[in-house]
Length: 318
Picture 1: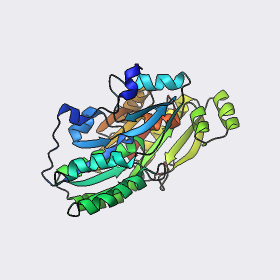
Picture 2: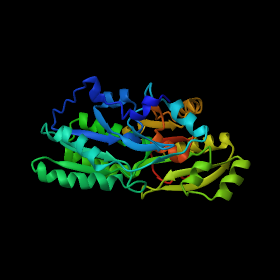
Picture 3: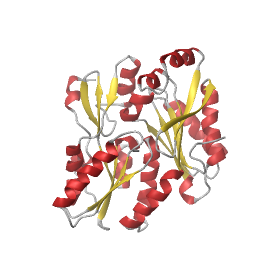
Picture 4: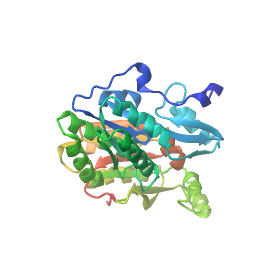
């Protein structure tokens, strides 16, 4: 990465002079963990709040991957042994993004990263409480999605469809609170050392598991926290588990026709999973394949694959 990259805060849609048209009086916001590309965020009319990370002592504000900070740039640094860690969004960043709309008389509905994985939700709520004194006529709602990665992306994508179909802010809030538990996150981790660093597994487990090619299968549980549910040996069996989780649990309503697949710089494996889902799950009409942001990738490492869908059982039992 070039030296100038450390001063690069985020790629802002506003820098493209993009105008958000809010004819219904409220806007949708999410954050960088939703794994939305700048193109998809623009298509959805969703603003994305950047999130902080540090790579070997160099601070960044991440919003989207781009030419200056690509998927291979970030994961290449992890593979090279560089250390990355994340922190919660500063309340001043929330204030900047929220006030951009409040000053225009636009209400805010923010779909936030799970409170079970970060204190970000509480920081956003505190900021909104302060801003209510300054903008008493405006409505501001922060929804704890209990989702992570492209699970938040899936919830956001569907929320946009509801909004475009005419849902009011109150109706959309009620829908999101009711629907969030149906968002299933099932993923396999390729490199166990990143789970060890995060305290998810012991050093001994990481060493033995790596030697035996053990791939943990994890989910985001009903409390919005990571939870291991299985251990399989080898990549092929891990990918079969993800596919079977979808086949066993996928709902059959219209919203469930769309799902997301995320990858930690392993596009080939993600595409292979997409093709398998399309072949074996005829109900699925649209599959988005997205790279995992550094905010997520820091904790799971290169090679992670997750699949996000609306399902019957959030624990993804097969």
